[in-house]
Image (cartoon, rainbow, N blue to C red; front, side, top):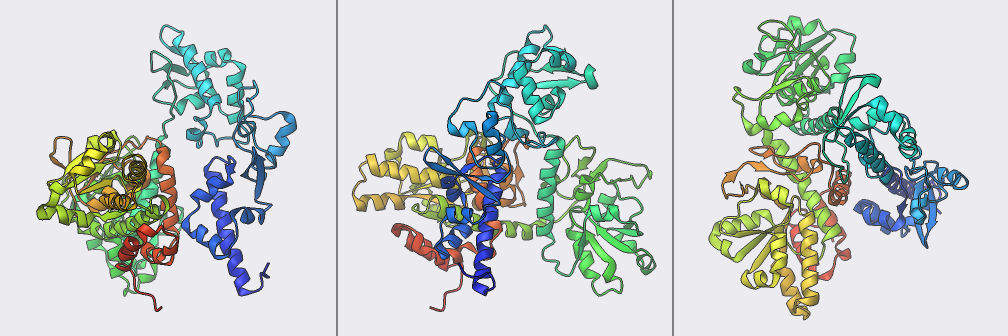
Length: 625
């Protein structure tokens, strides 16, 4: 192995360490559950796969290079990887095996195919208080479900389906007690994670628990707390704020946390409109139009703020030539971030505290804390230009393009694609009757809206599958789509493979014709909206409503004129996890995906190279060679 002192050796070590870090994050995201080496290989980012290819080294070799970080487990002739010294949150092992798992040297009994002991499948290694954050994962474990079933059974046995929490504690069995001990929670704490199933009132031992149903549930699904929901909104707010202020390169930002922790004098400058200020203000703030040099001179820090940061960043950049520029900042996330940190507000008319805050656009309201967090978000009465949303929308579109290419190369490289803009052009030219558009999303998503494909018939994936040959013979082009192109691309790939195998397309020429006829929309309905496409509801009427599938892809859609309809409490769908991994991988890459695709074209199946190269070369400069 090359010495670490050489430049090439340093570069290789750094690249391989990045691969190891990605594997470590996978194991942490799995709840520290050991993962098969083969599964890790399938979900590695393209960047890590290229590192392994560049240095001609296997994934297992990288894992073996870090014995202090990983442990390799032999299971049924296969190999699994766990984090060294971190026990899995699985069934408890016999005492003789427990030490081995704790050191990462042996698989848990579930992986070995053994029957969990009668102790109730007690979980291992959960720090005190951590179980509340991991309840979504813990609720998937049979032991936790059995404990909830037992509590529900006790409540259903009473006339009012109600018991005191102290009574529940005295009646539950040893298995449920073992679960509570292992996750380090009291009965009330566990049940509070399931507000749709258990209603709690009162405090301490006198807390009354009522079961919300009249029969046992097949499965109990936890609901995220207000804190968890707000954490998700705050994370999206910071990304949005970074996008909307990205062009103000001369402006410097500060955070609410830094401002609240500051001990020196701060002058708050309100950069919002009079109508917005009329609802509420930050105490002792000064309107931007009334700020004087004398006011700017005294404080240690001057902080401009608006709704989400755009207007205040523009003001901050405009003050770059001022003698006070060194101490002028804008508040990242603006009033939305202030509300997320429970900042105080006052009514300017009465100087009394208020919980009302104005949001300058309806599209921005979802970045504020959820209802029930202590603030009332108003969105009416303030005229505002939506031009400010065009720039962050363009950044979202660029990220969507990268993600769409990443998903295509990973999951459906043999499928031909069509750009949303090209399809819209064809439909606008009057060719709609030759196209069949297939919506591969869930019924829940389709119930809200689907693409307004002018002149074309739009059907579901199930409808296409039932009469695939009839539709293929009736239309010149069949276009599939979903949210970002992942699910529809996989559906398209499987459908073509099935038809080639059993549908009479065994001839290579016919198979090639079929592949060119059944295509997938690159970037899905998100790309359709970014390129000016419209939506219709189930009655065929124009609408601005859209179901985004899951929260992970909320930042892939344009901001202007779109109202996203979704349940923030809904857990992430299982089929979204691999696509979310693609999105995370794209976020770590600087260059555009089409350029990387040119470099990797030798890895693509022959039938898609020409199509991929043509599209990629439109987006990047040619190489010198």
